Amino acid sequence: MAASSQDRDASDGFSPRLATFYAAMFVFAGIVMPFFPVWLQAKGLDSRATGIVLAAPMLMRLVSVPLLARLADRWSAFRAALIAASVGSVLAYALLSQVAGFVPILLAVALASVATAPALPLTDAYALKGLGLRGRAYGPVRLWGSVAFVAANLGAGLVVDRIAPIHIIWLLVAALVMVAAVSLALRPLAAAPPPREELGVPGRKLLLSPGFWAITAAASLIQASHAVYYGFSVLDWRAKGLDATSIGGLWGLAVIAEIVLFAVSARLPKRLGPLGLVGLGACGAFIRWGAMSFDPPLALLPLLQLLHAFSFGATHLGSIQLLARIAPDRQSATAQGDFATVLALVMAGGMALAGVLYADLGGRAYAAMALAAALGGAFVLLARRFVGEPLA
Image (cartoon, rainbow, N blue to C red; front, side):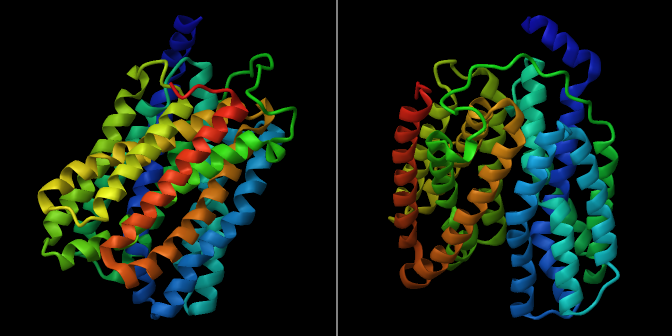
């Protein structure tokens, strides 16, 4: 059966087409995350207005992600939903390029977020279902998104230095056109197999499942433990004398470690199941942030950055694969969408807390992140009880 599944993947090109789609999406992410605020500044928005505009996508995802995920599940239309979201994103950003002023930009960004926010959870649901039917692993396909993100950061930085900031919007539109074009090449999912035995989720009551919430709480806390790192590591390292090149190298090393884990994930021991990966992520995050809270010597930072493979990579791989296992067959997109929404809320809270803690404690704020990771590990043990999935 495995051989025939892989033959089908080779014949319809599902994996390379999906890998290309991930890469295209993360090219957009690699441009919009660092450089969209620069465009907003070029449009005349001050820091306060920019902050409000950047918060709009987070608020809109609370509505758009659960809604579109449920529609995709209801109609079994993952590919169609991805194409619609991709084309809608192009149109929304083209509209955004033509507006000016705080309120019109805010409304246009909110509209664009309706299309862009659900893309990643929908793609993960589509990927896990399609790759599972074809006997392929998720990690080696998803890694191309991380590779593209790094390449886009570097490439866009070179381009932005050579163009007027007001033209950054056209880089984003071009990236989204590429996403839309690649989405048309995505393959339809094969017919679903007969209903499978589910791990602790009765019927359709996903949101009433303690297993779902235990897994979501575990992964959200572990991922939110990165808040001080994401928000303030650059400031902290610059204050300690590191230059921009060294800091960029440290961030790049973390992403490389993540890519390596994705690449070898299909070869990890079978006894290390998805829940075991999340547990490994909790341990990696606890060690990483615990060490960072003691102001480690600069020579130790590269080793701590390698733990990103576990604190982020293992947590991501394990949680979405476990959600795919426990979700009822017609709620795979719903599970990924609701998980992504909760994770965004917890991360937002973590970022707000990180700002307060860093202002008062400096690098010692990492100690709170270690505690968050430890709490996430406790929820991993709780999830084991509900879903019956071994840690190893």
